[in-house]
Length: 264
Ligand SMILES: [Zn+2]
Ligand SMILES: [Zn+2]
Image 1 (cartoon, rainbow, N blue to C red):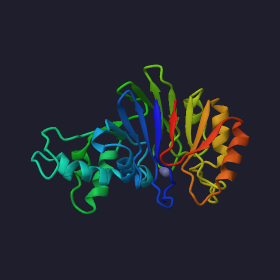
Image 2 (image 1 turned 180 degrees about the vertical axis):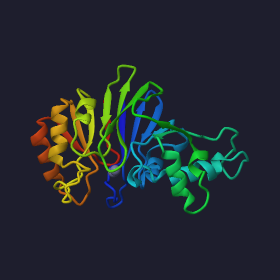
Image 3 (image 1 turned 30 degrees about the vertical axis):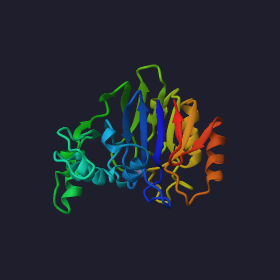
Image 4 (image 1 turned 60 degrees about the horizontal axis):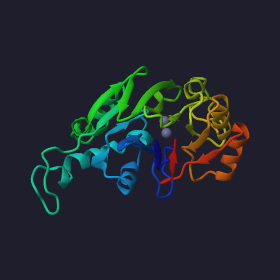
């Protein structure tokens, strides 16, 4: 299985950056994991958006789903998606309509968001939406997706992707406060993608994210093989982030960068 980082910023984008978006691919099947602010432009840099088989959304925060809006506009209005030939596009009777897997209640949220300026059914017409639950198991090509609820400010799912071809396993922690669920869910995984958002725990006392040290502790307790820290702003010192996480984990750690590719 192959992971390509499209975006890794927290809720505000890095300079020239994008929020959460990761391509997961195996044997010709392509899944976009989260589609946060700025991700559609990065997707266009690396892949043909009409060839994405499915999009999977971890939770309904803007930095994890908002670029479904421009993605939907492309699927709806791009010349290449129309039945009649125009310019260099030959016309198609079978325009792309990727699957979109999102948490329960997503369709209603999408309607409220897009409905703010009119066409509330934009996203549901552009994609084939399936709402998933914590016990859903999805298969795309040779990849199997499982979910676990993790604590955050809104209903949020960690996502485990395992190859059915013996090609490895990737576990994505989404956004979460310190918790045992992610540790259990990620046990022994080949690559843990875990957020390391905070320079220190939330001042309010209400937890929703992890510090780099906490990210490392989760990885250590779950006995994972490798760690990819993400959701780290370019306004934090990377050396400090990686040092804190490494001290807690004791193994190999990388910090997500746009365009970086990882095998699992
Ligand atoms: Zn986020
Ligand atoms: Zn979030």
